[in-house]
Length: 439
Image (tube, rainbow, N blue to C red; front, top):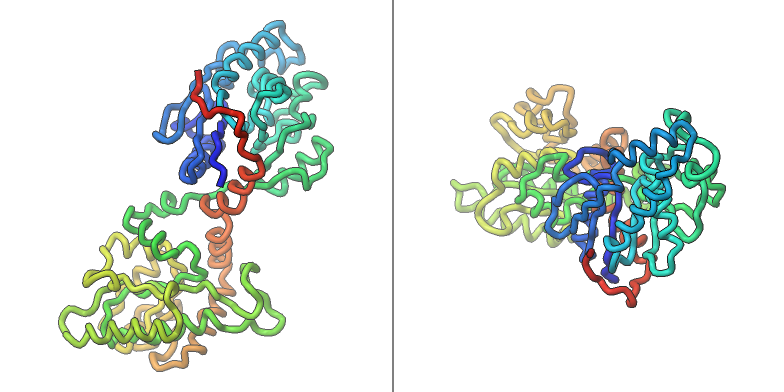
């Protein structure tokens, strides 16, 4: 893959708190993760990642005294004498900061009227033959937002925000913004790229470093759904039924006339990406449990579930720490507990607090805990029938369907792979540009 030197520009950057600042930080991290040289140009903020070069340019701020003085005049409909000088000073500050840059991504600074001198400077630079290609990344649009209308006026420089410059690439964060921008600039909507914003799963769910490593090594982020079985490997836990249910889920046909809930799996298979994680080690008190573990591994191979059925105990005698198991309750999509016998059933309570759907054997202790709020099956049930119960429950669960769509398309890693990496690849590496540092 082409490794490029990419510059991201905005008025401010982390640790300044803001939606665009957060998105910019994720973009910078993802690009650096994939080997690109990344620099961030901003007026406010501080270095936050040793792999990302931070270049402070005071005049590109939205709150610099000169910028605020010019904006006050512009808001009143007057272009002050200092506008051209300020724009020129900004352009002169930008040129050395862009030395060696092969792609410049401007976040919102060509969409809003917070610093129109910066907008004008970027337009002027985009016309220079030695300037890097320019991507205008639009989060908000001043001309389509009522609260900005009193500050906008016909003519230059306000029209910079509603005129297609030519020779630039437009990116927006939603289909709604694409339709707005296409109408505003009077350009075809298919010339505008949509790259949605995303979420950082590990931060949102506060996942331990070991949990993150486990998710990555087992590829659990690709699971749909991910079933959690927090139990030691002993025969009374009936884990072989969970394996057979998983196999049935992965091969179960879609009923005639019904489509998969998330719309992105091949017809004929309902949950071909279903996975199972069994968190516990083998039971410590019965030597026969070692043989049970090996039988489970053999059954997994017989059912062709390698890569789909994961045992924490496979790497050694120990199971997962409590903190990691707690993480998995937040990360998983459902609890499955097919036990033949239990004295109590703590996993049902943990699943309830994590708001996981519960699928468990209908034995008295579990029924006492789950009441009408769990889905039950016989510990001797046909695996296909249990798979049907799970599929029907999840397909009717709006929270699960939404979660599946988010995991499938709105994590930052997915967004990078599906949208940002192809965008970067569409700009060929410019061999003539030295990847030098800023002056």
